[in-house]
Image 1 (cartoon, helix red, strand yellow):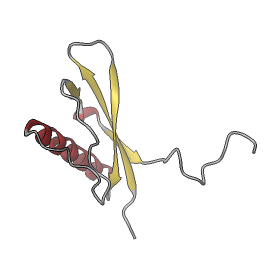
Image 2: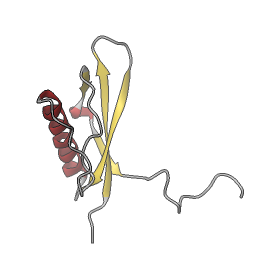
Image 3: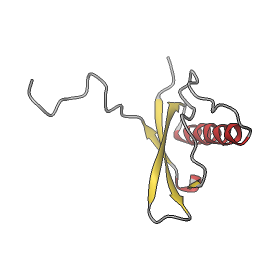
Length: 99
């Protein structure tokens, strides 16, 4: 049986701009702790690739990866949270409108 999909939410901010946001990672893991670790590894791989002038790795079979990297944004990994991923586009999701 495949591992469940997790969503890892990491607060982000820029030192030179007011406000903050959230960066979301998704992928398969055996626990929330492992999910945060794998998301952090995916982020570090993206950061290292960008610094080396290489393409950012993404599309891993387990789902973890990054589609982009924004220099200047700081991710607060100590405040990261992980839980089961709820796909907002899955076909079995109840509809809020009549057909």
